[in-house]
Length: 447
Image (cartoon, rainbow, N blue to C red):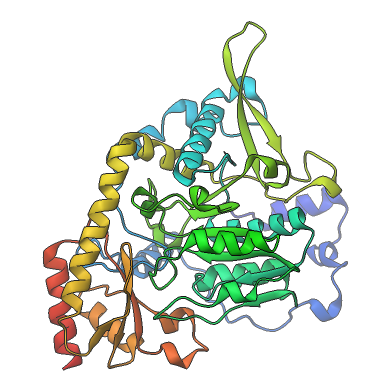
């Protein structure tokens, strides 16, 4: 969108219409102490073409890794997105029917969301799913609040294997509640979260594969939580893993939250992404967000409507389960199209390719002097310990055109014990040449 400036004459005319002597009158309600009077140090105005050139130069510094070995994961994964996805999301029935509030003119959007919900329930083996959340992290926080409403308890226990960003978002939602327990991370093994469940616990939050790539025993966690009357929230940052791993709902999970970015959505330098949230049918009234349903019209024709919408705009505030003002509609559409293109067999095959490439990566890394692979179990992501600080090592690899993973210290800057840890991911796009290039570079850098 282009900037449309107002001339001094136009500003004077607007002030005259509203009866303000000058622009300062518009800010008279702001306390004097809150007004910034000092110089912000901003650059002087520039011609539009120079601003564009400057912005293009900044963008040119980004290294998307599309032309070299790419092993970045940690909650955002590079997968192949078929060109069909981008083509179909631009169809008019999806572009023009933006909001589902009026079903008579938004059947395309409503049907898509209905199909999306069905796909999510099948992936997670849960009874119901909403029409998506903002992303996996906010979905996790909303699930925690949902568990509190359901159990009427306050204590929340977060596994140390939960993604640090997800943990921080939960903290922000709960405002550092004293009833929130965040367990310490254990890069080489699972934490003792089951020992922290008691009669005051509303829910435990377990991620699988966890932030370090370890697979968690969901059935054991579910049994332990239910024995104390608590709920189990299972978090999945790599939704492709559900193509191989048994669905959390079949193992006793009460609420499943996932980041759906891997299907149909590119990395996009951090977003927008797509939160999946599914639960059991008896919990549907406490589920945040919106739900689309199938019905028939006055003539008996199949149609779709907004069945449940639990935000304050639609119902009384005391009955609202969230104030989520929308869902990630376009990202959900891309997810749904990609899932339909893959089908069940294709999705399983995609997961097998990811795991096979990760096995190759783990085997190759194990042969590099100065590198120790910490995982005994993993899907497509793992953690290594190097003999040198990871952050500097990753920067040197980037200088060689290799995005060698995520240094854990970047996400856990206050924990000195993770200084030499790197989380790496392999997907279906990872080639044998990529793996060989990474290992050769690591051997040289760690020599």
